[in-house]
Image 1 (cartoon, rainbow, N blue to C red):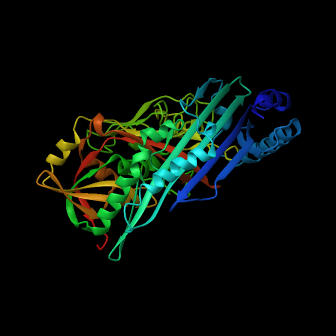
Image 2: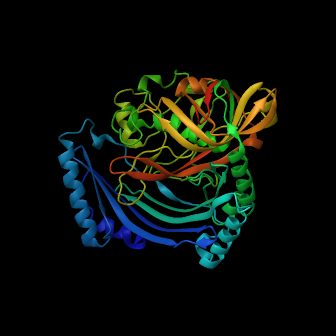
Image 3: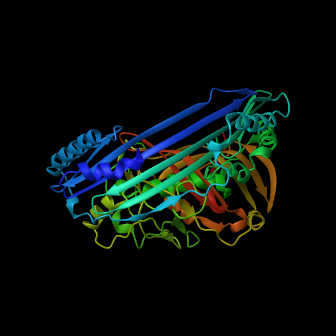
Length: 485
């Protein structure tokens, strides 16, 4: 389909102000071994084209799975009709958008393609990883899973733009549930939503220590089932990278998406407490907080060279020394924002989850830059606190401000040393005041590249892959509570 798409599109494209086509072919595979039994594998192939048209000042989209001349011509007609209809009600002249003539390519670095490995060999890997979690009979459920995705995308514009991108994603997970004297606890290798997910091939399993994670996960599930509840009160907290990723995602990523700030998008993730006048002056966090939008980082889940509107993707700091610098959004939202405030700077991060969805403003690779503190130094600085790992629950209000998050695993900290394991560690706060309590940022030795494969947003719904990389971080004076609070 993609081989003929450009020529076909240029033959049938109508005479309009601007047009683009984005063709996508995606193959995915999901396999799971649970309690020693291979579950039915899932293999899906999905392909189609999204057509966009700007004409008479309006913007219209139409998707089709028929990439023939007749199919594309019909999609162009529908998109043009929608653009004309939308122009009468639009709050912005889309004809003023800059032309997109980007050219180039991107390909994930892959050493051992997942698709080249047979199903049996992958099931053998999962069976071994799953079996290794069954340390004793108190492990009542155990499984290992692997999802792999290969995506090809071609983006062509009437202005001469042409970009090709190919991604390979691997998302492994190991999970164990322990039950001891009526207490049941689940521990996972990187979150129950496969938080250790990266671009690459089966070498991602090596980076995730997949073959050896089972015993650790099982031991920690048993520790949790035998542990006391996390204490409650105001105290210092160290969040490990597999919890930092959720903290970044919910209380920095979503509130900085530009369509939410403009009031154009309110589904699923709500609005935002952030306003356009905050950029350039608002203290989002302490001076230790440096947050980058970095689509260039190797292996991270949302790395790309061009966003889904064809804009060139570059690394940019969105928060620097605690000060809010720029929002997350694509060319459409940025142009609309600049009509309200001309000095707003932005990044290229309009993205769609599939060929049958239009690009919207999404966070991509959103990372906290490493600091200078070792984990031992952070622990030694705390007289009374908790170290928390691996998100398991989250709740945040409609403006992405007040939140309450829970973790799988906790360790008490007393007089500068790690103490006993605690279960159901939770904490709450308000986004900006929480980030202002950032007291120490971990060095490169604490830094991990992670992400989430299932960030939901939009209407109709879009579930997309997002990368988050972060070091361990210390926060002071946090409201902590246990499962019985």
